[in-house]
Image (cartoon, rainbow, N blue to C red; front, side):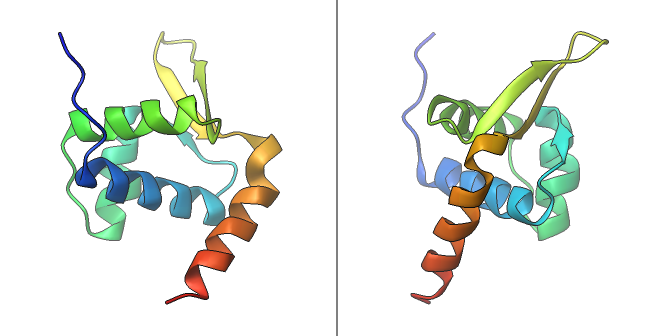
Length: 97
C-alpha cells in the first residue's frame, strides 16, 4: 500500500495538533481520541487516516512521541524536549497574522 503524500488536510491537522499541545503539553491520546476530542473540540471533523498521517509526520520530525499503553494502543504526546521550541515557533508564527 502506498502512503499518500502529506496533503493540505494533513497540514491543517498537524498545526491544530501542535496548537492543542502547546496549550495542553501533558495531553496524550490515541489517533482516534485526538480526532474525536482534540480536533472536533476545535471545530474540525478530520478523517482518521488524515489524523494518522499527520501524527506520523509529527513523530518523524520529532514533535511527538508515541508510547504504548497497557491496552496495546499507541498514545501520542508532545516531545517534552521540544516544548519550548514549539511555544516559541507558534508565537513567532502568530505574530505574522
